[in-house]
Length: 177
Image (tube, rainbow, N blue to C red; front, side, top):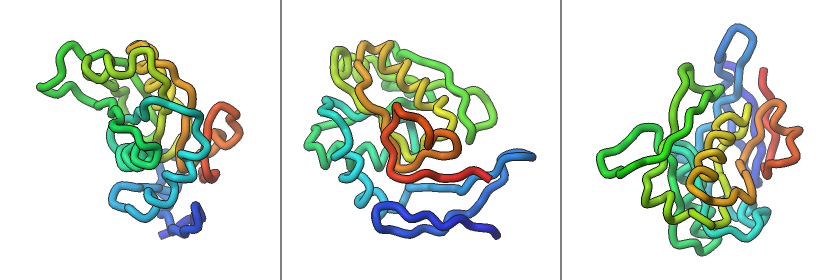
């Protein structure tokens, strides 16, 4: 199996290269379960963020990073946009998203209680990897729909052309193949 060597925050990871389509392969970066990479990257990202009231992420891979950045910033909570409506959600708000790593169109949902928390608040959007930016754009629309103000968008890695964006904070570039 082909791999890509990633160096970030003083750590090295060998990422398997996965074919997504005929002409696109990516280095698969999964932070779920990798407490070391989350623990090392979160403080670096936190230092680059403006002052915010909430960290918001999309379910699922951004959750450990959102937690750790919130902890580093001494925020009491963070918000997770869910990929399906849960029984506890009353009057959730929703937006549609098309991501590079999912085959079909998906939706992101925000519980009305979470929407109330971020209304009028300064928000940083956090994810593990920013690629096409579609998930991030959907998350931004969701926060704005809830009345929050997105001040920053951050990730550990910017994949492909995302490395050229000026509106995101990231630690390392990740090529596509």
